[in-house]
Length: 211
Image (cartoon, rainbow, N blue to C red; front, top):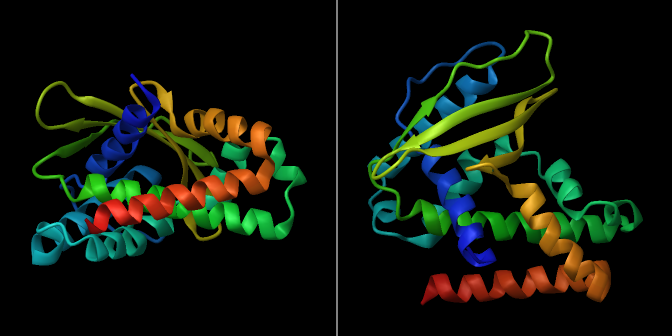
C-alpha cells in the first residue's frame, strides 16, 4: 500500500466514522464516546438537509467539516506530535504556519472523502475508562459495505471539552504516519521546506477539487 492510498484510507475512514447515525445527547460534561456519536448525528443531519453537500459542492462540504468536526480536534497537539522534535526548534510564526497548512491538508482530504459517504454507520464500543481519566481511547468500527473497518480515537480532556488528537485505522495511527513523511521533508529542506511542501500540496488539492 503506497502512502497516498494509506492517507486516503485514513481520512476516508475518519469521515465515515463521523457520519454514523446515532442518538443526539447533550450533557453538562459530555463523555468522549458520546461526543463522537453526537457529532456524527449532526453531520449526517446536515448532509440530509443540504442538497449542495449531497451533490458534492466542495465549498459547502469544507464549510461543514470546518464548523462541525474541526472544533473537536486539538490541532496544536496533533501538529506538534506529527512534526516531532523539530517542533521545539520552530519559531512561533513557523508553528502558526505549520498548523494552518496541516489543518488545510486534513480538511480538504477529509472533505473529499466526506462527499462520497452514503449509508455507512458507526458502532461505538464500550468505553474502558475511569471517571478521573484525562486521556482515553475511544474504539469504534465503521459498518457498511464489506468487512467492518477498525477506527479508534485518542482523546484528551481539555477545559473546553474532549478533543481528538490522533486516530487509528486498522492499527495504523495517523500522527505516526504523517510524522514519517514530515521527518523526511524536514531532514531534506528544514521546517520552511516542510511548510512550503504542505502549501504546494494544498494548492494542488484545491485545484483538483475545483476541476
